[in-house]
Image 1 (tube, rainbow, N blue to C red):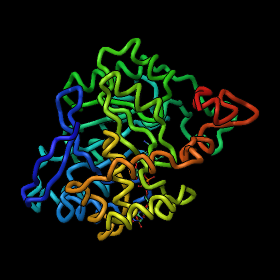
Image 2: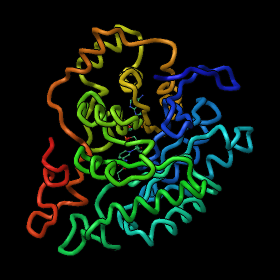
Image 3: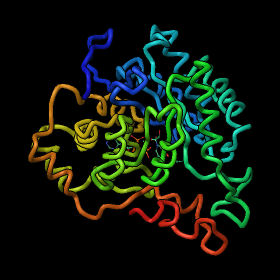
Image 4: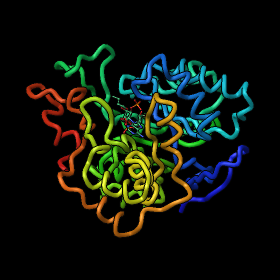
Length: 322
Ligand code: NDP
Ligand code: 1BO
């Protein structure tokens, strides 16, 4: 259930309560492929848009710019304690001894003393310098338990307030739940009306794990153009909202936090104006019935080698669950 509050500027906002007791703001700014423009986008989001949640990752190569944007916002009066900052552990660092150094590097790049959430970015370990697609030997064994223990140590040392995972399957999440001392607070997954992934949402809900929906607008280059989807467009016109707002609101009404990315100041501000209206049930059901369910972020380019395994197909990556 989302909880409503107001920012100091008087803007209504919502958050979800995590297993840890911390709150995650319902809408965050995504920063993948934001590059040098991330600083301005983060500043605009925090100071003009009323965002308090920023999603980044070492792999995005923009943590220094994201950190600079947050620093500028803090100089403008935003308090660190009001921010929820997420970053992610990349696949080359998925061995126990590499977790803490990778995390410390992320803190340094972001100019922060702690993170609110640290996530395993993908559950596949890559050799440093791995090619895309991977060559033989580029995909290594992943010691999930050993890595999770190190994530737990970061949380127990209060260096990070919450730990979690991304891009897991039912199989992998059940495996992790079998040995975890700290249950993941958050599971970050691709979710939008073109890829609802109901089974994963259900499993997370059953275990009290909050889901953050990534690529909520269908993602960027090579993604799915949900902004121009007929159903989305019809409902947006009917509700006098934009397609982007309808897609964000759909995610919120499913109980997920949502992290749309934008570099455009108007769209950044538009995407968070989603708290004082609802999508009526009939329209929500229409959005939840869009056909041709398909992942955009299937991991093929990064993890599949069709001849040399261990993952020879997209189905292998997703444990043949789709
Ligand atoms: P999104 O689904 O957020 O879509 C972003 C695209 O939509 C951009 O091209 C953006 O262009 C455009 N856009 C933004 N707002 C609007 C709007 N109101 N109307 C029309 N177009 C709009 O894509 P992402 O894949 O970036 O996902 C969001 C975030 O999720 C990422 O940035 C990242 O932080 C996270 N993520 C996490 C993953 C993981 O593995 N854990 C994987 C993928 C994403 P413009 O900038 O010009 O506005
Ligand atoms: C490979 C990185 C995808 C965006 O999180």
